[in-house]
Image (cartoon, rainbow, N blue to C red; front, side, top):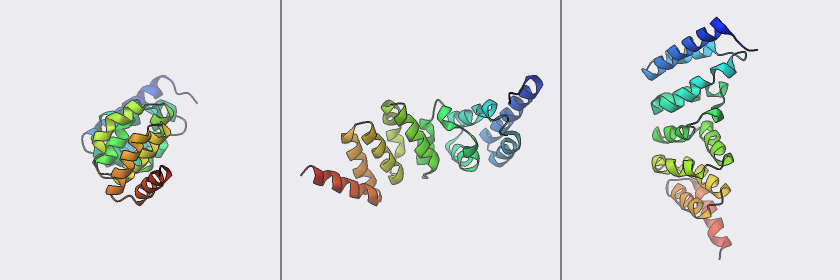
Length: 171
């Protein structure tokens, strides 16, 4: 169903208000408004709000919003999707939206975008492991091995196992 005129303007106004609440630190209030406003009938016209939050919200807000209501939206449509990875890493978390963001960048062949976020990932072993897998899919085995080693050093057993498999396959 396509919404029109006054109804569309009201939707934009309401979601803009919710976004501003989130940006000003009133995350719960903003989330409540979004949950009450966004429906299956207007989701296509509402997806922009999640992209705006990803693009301009502080990382704590981005992670809180995605963890709460991210499933309602299509974050793969967002232009600055790499920021999802950066935000989860900066708050020391890992979540399914990191996978979605990485998979989106890989499917678009955006190794350049992965390169840009590497300095922001820090020592988040799980994200390092996922990025190693992404670089492997993008045929950059040297970078993949480097990230596996770093993931292993940061407690990711799977990273250590993969390093061992790679090193034994070359011997």
